[in-house]
Image 1: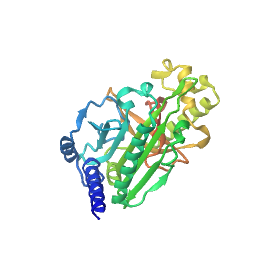
Image 2 (image 1 turned 45 degrees about the vertical axis):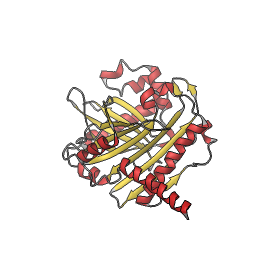
Image 3 (image 1 turned 60 degrees about the horizontal axis):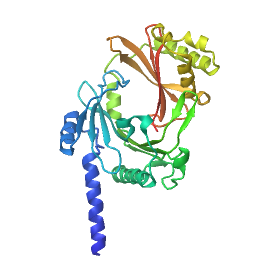
Image 4 (image 1 turned 120 degrees about the vertical axis):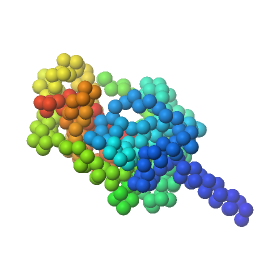
Length: 320
């Protein structure tokens, strides 16, 4: 009986630790509360060097690093509404390449990947304690999938249509070079906690783009993709904004082509305005593949258009 008692105590301590470190109640928590919590947890403020493409009214995230043991240090991104500092979503990410760069990712040992898997199991158990059983995909037990780059478990929870939680992991020893695209070993855990009420509330923060502009831009991008698919770079360039047409190389177009799944079909799932560094406001459309029903999508394509509804920037994004 003594050993049973000790086991229960250890489990309780583990869950208490996660309760302090992972914020799931994003509806009731404000940014100042999270900043105060980071100080207690030893979170180290980080310079946010990246510019995230976000809907109007959503601020660039505050970023903190927390030191970890046996797995990469944790980066926490707090995305919030400028209007009232309510949380839009939180991203927790354990990924060594955040600090070393993708090119320096070395192949992990079996012991190291098992630390990732155990961390994932702990996170899944803690979140399930709060939200019940998840919608799970992938295999956590077959580590032979790591060599092929196919070890990609994921779990989803949704709480009364107000909070969604997406947990995913990719462990891959795979290294491959194909044309201009290089695949490096990847070892990452990501956890998104999204405030669905905040997203709904933000719909009216700024004036959205005109539907006529959205329609024109959507037609332009799909025509661009068709030309890209057919390797007609000359025609594809006709859909690019003048500001980038001369600087984009054929090699870059080929690399972009390799990162788009043409056969799956795409659809707009978000439309908004994006402010540029010069203060200009540009139309932004985010596309998802039609067979990807995840929230947020596992793969998306972010596209920025100039004032003539021509393509100014394209960013395929994969949530591995």
